[in-house]
Length: 374
Image (cartoon, rainbow, N blue to C red; front, side, top):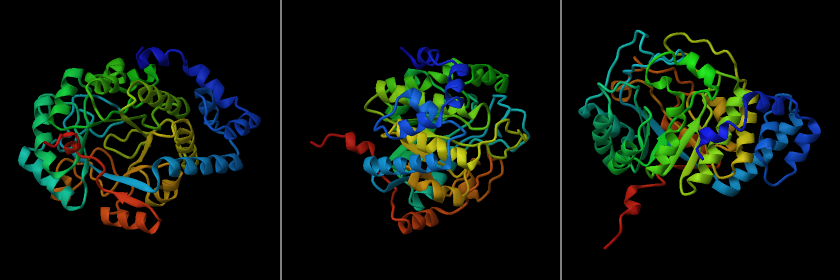
């Protein structure tokens, strides 16, 4: 059974009814349990949860994270290879109709960007593109991965959905992780927000993480873009999706992100604004549902908020990010996908983590670990 089958067992109307009709007594009971069910998770998303209950849940989330992950934070950097795209996603800076300088890095520029991030200390890189097969297809990505590989121990990709065979090519080239957001799990809204282009295929995107798992990806990251649809149901489905992947691909590390919409070319206005308090509640609830999942916090969020959310379940953070192809070497954000919110340097983030009692981890994996010694 695929996740497409499972999600049909949780109609959005029923999910939202469970969330909003949860009582304080039910929430108190859940917070006293060692492990929680999917229905319990839904109740913990209730927007009327009291401040005292949120504080209790935050303490539980912190304790669980310390037990499972210690005080380590994995640092990574995004490396944008291309902003060319054929999709008409209404909310994305790379929308095919937006006027911005389009660029796909040549392989010399790819190496320059990788070397720059290596010199800053990064050993985990996330390669990103739009969806434009004429400029950044599987062959291009395969070569880019081979160029980047000598500069880092772990490479993930956040690109267009692929077939199982193409994901196997990526793994063979040196990719060990996939990040792919469904954006919104609301099928009707998804169609409205993606009026044309390859990304308009809801099911093909939804099932891509499973194809990546079948291909042997060691890390799979998912999430929804908070602000597009009803954040309560989207966050619920993100947790449900991660839980499914963790059970089916039990050798794979599953991570969740909860990015909020940021200003981007095109001027899309979020229909559902997610407050800092609500984001905090989402993170804590996810930690209680999924004690062993990685929780990722990017530079979309402000520096003060990232500092405050750090103890509540976060295991991975980006630093010094740039969302424009070639932006690191050229010191420019022209052509970027969106504006980041935390512009502190990698060195500043490392200093903050150490001052807060955390151990910043630049490298925790290398494909060389899989190579037998003769």
